[in-house]
Length: 240
Image 1 (tube, helix red, strand yellow):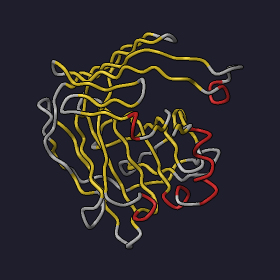
Image 2 (cartoon, one colour):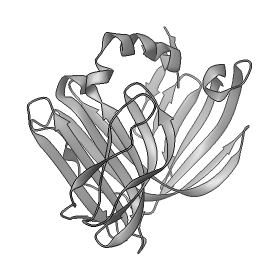
Image 3 (cartoon, helix red, strand yellow):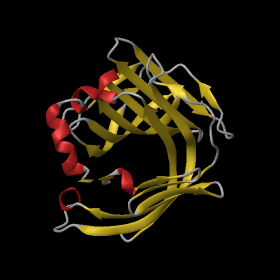
């Protein structure tokens, strides 16, 4: 990703363009066409190089409910497509599988209102999507959204089991996962490990079923630090 200035941005009801890359919605699917320069050090290549391709997300159902993730409605979350078919075609690879689409927005910085959160999305053994969103806020309150979804995308709240800590990543960001009593949650693979954020695959047990979850941990405390703020442009270049 590259951050760009206002002049590189355009959007309308069905598209969103930033520089040479764009999202557009057509015939019940969202397509991302990207044309970017990849950095050498995160991908272990010798020199920067251009990477082009597309990602098509075709939701099996689109939800219509938005959730507050803080106590005052300043931060909101929409699980747009709990389950979707995904196709990736690029100069580097071809891939087809299943996935998920959501969005967050708010009127204040995340670091202003959250100590940390754990979010996860996965599929139960019976094939139903399930999502957990566990927030720990600066006002002292906590919030846990636990949802499972039917074939039509209707959200069904459920009582999540207790949360347990799992192994931290290299940068020490805490990770936690709900798991049924008498069972354990374990990290299968860490996909991204940074100073304020980790993304992992975690295996757990929910509602009496095995669940393989895509999991993220976000530390607002870390994200708000001056050192981390100064590191961000190295991971996400900025063009003014």
